[in-house]
Length: 485
Image (tube, rainbow, N blue to C red; front, side, top):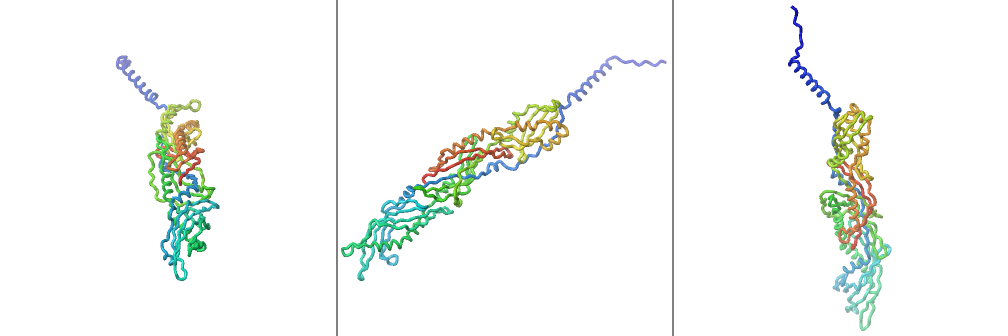
């Protein structure tokens, strides 16, 4: 028997087999080629987020400055104050038997205004007096009481200084006297001059008079109260920008003063309030009133410069959005267009003193890469910029294995050159507002501030858990004019 010859069936079963094979081929092709990733996936690790300082610590950054307060006291004011306080009857002794039964009574009036001049660092006082005296005179065992009136000008010279505890220290010396109307008494119808007797009494009592003057000055002249009031006025935060809720704050530390100088009819001195001046943003700082003053420090001169820290803030989300608007969608080619990438996202945060830039990529490679650089304030462009921008160590290691062409390219340098965060408008606005506050600004009755800003000098950019803070130092000169002290 001849075996049956095998034949191919050209019926429906075979056609279905061919169709199935074609469909499997299409699916396999799609899986192998169409669904194949467009680039190698980069498996990089994010650098750890960390910060050396907080926002509050940056805002409390201190810049030592001196508020320059020239003080002029006119002799006319000194005379007026003394003459207001010393008027009419200024001394009386109504007993003949006190002071060891001295048989002497006296009343002393201010005859006219006291005169004050200055010479050789001393205040010179001329005190015009009218004096009534009653004395017992013994003749042949009988005592007769006689009255007399006379006029005299007493002269004193006083050195004036301020002690460390803010008390006024005077050292007064008698500087002689002159008779305007000499004393006499009538006895048995005769006017008997008793100038020598009265002169002896005056000479005997001048020492106690000068001592009393110094005691009264120390007891009654109070500088602490007005200076403490001015001290608390100076410490009060002052709003310089409603838009940015920015306050100018002075944190005084000590008070300096130069020796008193006498120039013509004016007493001159310079007070320096040394401390920290800064701007703060947010709610008005709460500053409790001081109840005491620091000790007064004598210095030969007081500087008239000041320094204020101006702060501009950019939160990380805000800064990242500004950078993303500039870079997302940009493409970069490498090695004669053999490789290319496109930036898909940008983010940033801090790691100690470095700003971490996270860039999402697609193209020849895809995934996230991390770069680090040191932020600084660029005064020319008024921006926060970066220097020494380089790939993070883990990102560099991954790129060396899978995309060394990206390491050799100019991608990092291009980001460093073009990645900027504008903050100049904030600083410029605060500088303008600060200058307005320093121009003939009366902060309290009789106290006027005048000053100018000479330069703006960059300090640094601080990275905090919430934002980048650019600090610049405004330097200039400031004077506080005090009237009616």
